[in-house]
Length: 517
Image (tube, rainbow, N blue to C red):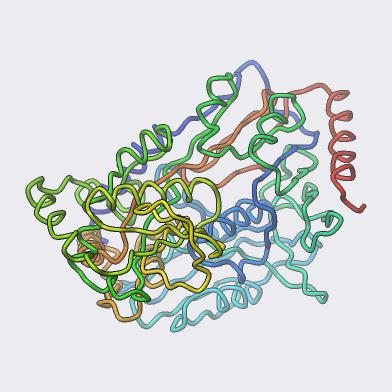
């Protein structure tokens, strides 16, 4: 990456971090140890095995938040764009960025007391890194050798699934992080844990976390989470965009990340009209993204015409500029002719939740105003509502030429995220965009995204941040602006008696919800 690009990116990181809400600690109070941090999350299930995570999956992003309590990475990235040592204390690379070396921290132990070795790191990274990258160890130094240059390797290793762990004889993954899984409970009738209890790792190389334990309950509905926070039954919750304004109005402590989730449309040539480039362009210019973000989502989202957000790419504002009004009118004028006499373009909702359905209906309204007949099909594929005829029909087996998707940015390397997205969402017969190692340069990356957008096979709609609600006793809440929770830094400011009673309440709550001890 050129020097000017590095400077611009660091500046953007600094500017963005200033916009993120931070809750400073009362200077008159000192951190204290003890207590159980009570957390509720929306996901109904998760996996702490990074090998099973899928790029762009919102549910796996929730798994990553929790996994960060158990595992560590070689390096981390702070909100100012500076790389910080974790399990690696130093790193270097050759002039061509094809050979990287990492000096490992000494005397690091996994939570079961086993010493971490360079071979442990080799085995994990070799399974997680792309083909063509070879990982070896010599003494306490791990070397990653690649055929193509990888100048963005640090961004990759500081994010996504690149945690370090070992697998015990029973197949359980064990980490070096500040907590370890002490208990997982499966609710009656369930197949996956719905309640986890994490305990402090006393021998963690970075020091003991402040809280003794973290009690995590999964699958709690959004409104229930909000009520539990208001009643003091929980310390940390996830807040959905539709409840963020309500939480703020009720004077709850609300934290907001940078935009990390993209909702968009992708064309599929299961239907013949979707193969017409003119129709795809007409569909693109028909979309009223501003209304979607400001009215439908109550200003809790940002309209976007780009695949990567500004904080990640550094150039989104260039691609996001408005198109020529006359050009839009000319394209809209062709739309009715293109779709006339053909079957409606079916829009399948691939994303879960009411928000996706609302966006799908708004897309259909915008399309109808441009003369394009769009039939919305829900994600179950059982029933559909035609926005053009307002008739309900069975479409279980009908092919869809348009899909509404959700994508959660997972890598801090914009090249990796863009390549993963385009590869996953574009049809196989689309023009293939080459993402060479030079695409880590902002100019090359900009050109690659621009080429992808010009085909109108992927149509971005809005990007949303994540919201978290904090109880009044939570101190030192310092997450990254892209959504990683640093729960090892959190401490609880409440009396010992209150701590004991709330721990008992949290335990009984898990059993009362149908859990089996």
